[in-house]
Length: 243
Image (cartoon, rainbow, N blue to C red; front, side, top):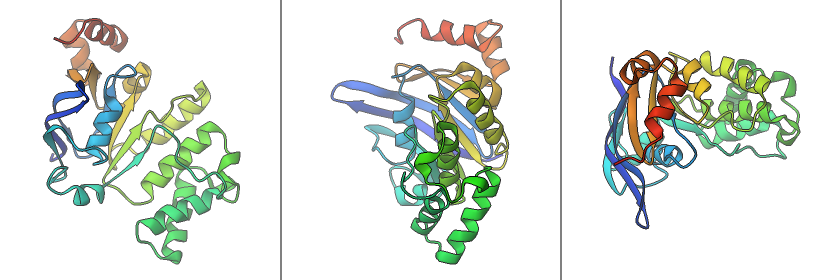
């Protein structure tokens, strides 16, 4: 299976602080990869680098054959992101938000409507299509944000803390939605919810102070650390400063 993402010594420094420190990892096509870490671990900075929203201090990453350094335009055409801050237009309807994003990505009016209707059905938003986005619950706004990221038909989607601030029921509903995407698209999820990574991911990277402390499947991480749960493994790996 080909790699969708290959990260090579990726580093980002801000005024003497190293937010991302020589990362090396790969993600296979169609794989669900969870980047797990506490707030400030460097997860969002890593995502912004891979999405070409930040320029690395050093190192590189190759997404489906294109370098984020040498060809960021080609990289951006292959991906989309559902950001940590739900980026919907509050005074547009749910359907208008989707049509707007489709148009930005080059669809004409008719194509945009077809794509919007498809996303409304796929993400369970059809009944709220005409409602303004600001009237949606937090969980429904997250659904809309993911629909807006999927409407461009990306090969890689980044979900940055998609369930932060949601109640338990809304989080579980979103998990079900995300599971349905597994295998159809390469998914990169950042989260600090241990159970989220445990429930959803094919591969997990545990990040701490800008470094990847461990990488592997849930079973591989538990075996390597000698721990019975991901929670125990996580706290063992992140209780010490990175040397």
